Length: 260
Ligand code: COA
Image (cartoon, rainbow, N blue to C red; front, side, top):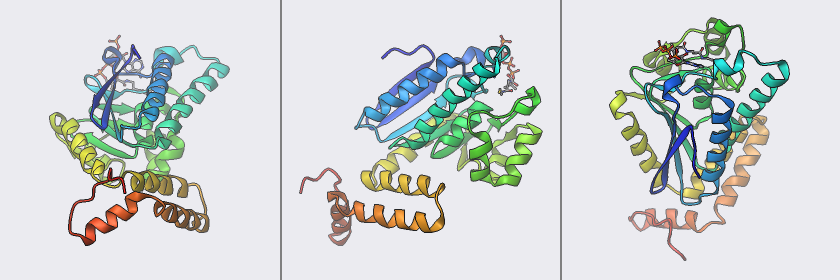
């Protein structure tokens, strides 16, 4: 499939998705959001792919929703735009593959929100992140008000959202918004290294762990424990669990593709 605003690069079990509108710092217009959604659908159907890395072309990750498109929105158009963004980010969040955000530069507004929907966030040392919407007299509309407090706590999220200030990578690391920071020229390589490490682990186990973690965030503690018990049991219906446990006892590396 041909895309105008994104690039997909396949490397064995990894796919790198680059948002590619560098002339506007990869700002998200409706066309790009809909293309991203199609790309995620495509990746979802590709059983070979185990890790998706999302990054930006040029000096930005994504500098937010496209201000030139939003400026004339009616409330109805704003609703549709926000719905499109939410649908895309839910698909990223619930993708049955590991999603790593490689934040190569500005991740503002919708850019920060895309990163929040990813499983793991890595950031370039010189990148900046934030939710600057209130500076434009608007609020985050792609889940920033919802996911940021879950990741960083409500006090930190409110400070970031109410001031609209961007923060640097060290501060993002300190508040737990990103997992690790790297020099910009090493970022993609480090994201791939992390992806390769994850790929050596049990494929089904990772899918189930992602379900356990994501869904437990929306459940009571008791429901989450029950859900984990069910997923733990389900895991044992697979050859993978037998192979992983046996391999340890036989002092060898597991072979997840073994057919017995
Ligand atoms: N929507 C539309 N266009 C955007 C954009 C956005 N969110 N962010 C940047 N651009 C455009 C700029 O208008 C500029 O276009 P031009 O060359 O036609 O003037 C181009 O991208 C380059 O941006 P510029 O502002 O010149 O780069 P900079 O390095 O001086 O500043 C930022 C970078 C990120 C600080 C600045 O672009 C910015 O504040 N962007 C808006 C961030 C924002 O508020 N995002 C949330 C939106 S809800």
